[in-house]
Length: 268
Image (cartoon, rainbow, N blue to C red):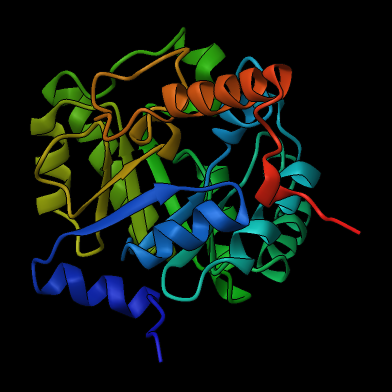
């Protein structure tokens, strides 16, 4: 019987200084294969807005769309913790609607939710979610849902003062009850500094080598999304070429009469 990754598992990893991994997934069978590979956390990222739905940025995806993909991923997973990214405006309006929307993701099969930011309002949302039994993953540094106010895809925490500000927010998130924090696009020194000063795990998304875990978008890892490749994303495969070549060979075989073959048909 496969043992499920839980909040307590991640806490133990931190205490034992044991690294763990996270990848995004958006469909049942990609999630299943990632799960079978032993990845600890599968994030149903709002990155699906771009890599799965073709939107311009993550702010375009709706709570209803995230719910559909979360259900699909959860059906394919038995080992990993499934974390649902809460999309733009799904937890910003008021605490009651935040609880309702996050609760819907748990009902859809997620084991936890991820929300961005560290403002006083976000802290109050996190406290309430934890009170009603919804585990929360935090997200600091570059926060994509704040793209327009940040002025683009810019590295955060580049000075000691900026790193201290992120650490202050991280400690507030920790106190509010998050079980881990994603640190996105911050200098490695900043990631190390924050990691060493928290008792909960940090998850690097372009935050260097010294965080407790790493997370990447699976489409970057598999080489499936060609439009943009972050500096911190390592490409392990070339699915773009594989899909293209398979589709091209199929097209050629159909048009030349090579498909179907004799062993691919039914006879009377």
